[in-house]
Length: 215
Image 1 (spheres, rainbow, N blue to C red):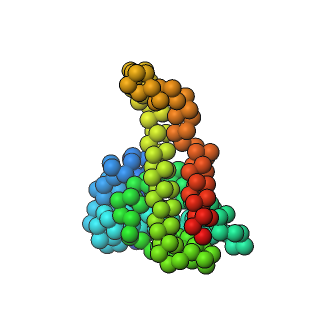
Image 2 (cartoon, rainbow, N blue to C red):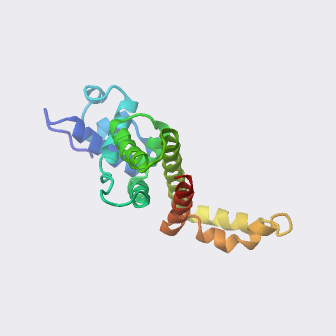
Image 3 (cartoon, one colour):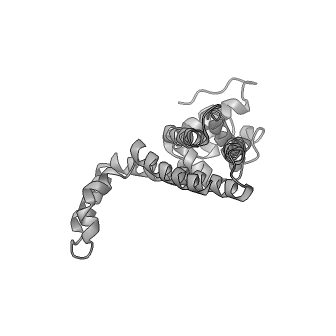
């Protein structure tokens, strides 16, 4: 049974911490302010004292998580700085899968998201990329990390589910080698490249190689 929050101790930090626990424990789709209030042992209206609505709280949780990202490493060349930012964001989303959903659902909200963008844009612009190229590159890198990591999170969820694995095997085994010859032939390689550090870095290195040519 949830413990009632002592009088006069409820604050925004406590609400954010408990909200994050619920999002990670039950999933973002099952999160509600009523359930959060129940866990805190307060009435739902008490939360509205600190946050206007659910979206406002979502932004606060996302800002809290994005604030955990380390600063861009100083002194490294721009490819290593780009790698550090992208790997750091991926690692944070793998640690907190709800962050991927929060970034995808409200991509332009939150000061901490802007802080991360400032760091990456600063690296690109100061390294000689023009204004538009720096902006396009930032968007490309961000969407690559978000898309690749969201895929990785979903694949990990399915692989933990015995029924999901069974469906996947059934689907692959049902494919006709006549109709899908290349997919069937490369099935072992496709299985090895669905996710993981090596696959993420492979895609990131392809992007950086293209950026070197552009620069």
